[in-house]
Image (cartoon, rainbow, N blue to C red; front, side, top):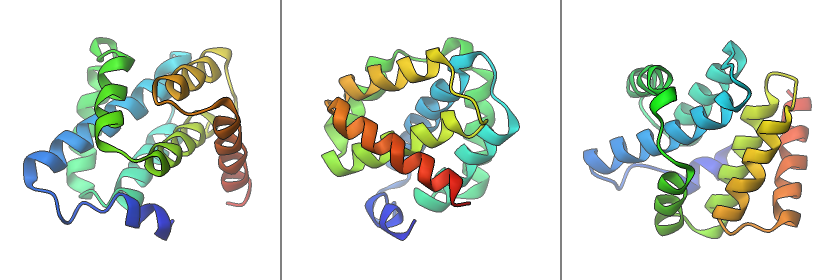
Length: 148
């Protein structure tokens, strides 16, 4: 977790960058969680936890943006909207860690639906992450979930 925190440390960013980054990450995570048509409590808690503990976002900001993203999930942006911004701002390592977190989110309800795995594969492609690296990220996510 500390390695992830260091990658996504938000101390050097100004307020608008922090809010834009939080909305971007939250929107993408909600998109992943909603792929099976249901965002359950485990998925919400996982997203909240990741945004607060890994991305160092304010708990109050996370709750507000998370609730807003859930309300607007049917009006969400395209995957290209999210991935184009991520590709511009994130290194390869950060994108791999983000993909691992997305795997944890879709796996957090204990079920992997075909739509969820399809979404992650599409995201990996849009983020220029190989199938091998995506598979390794999935294995790490499964190990993280089973070790908790």
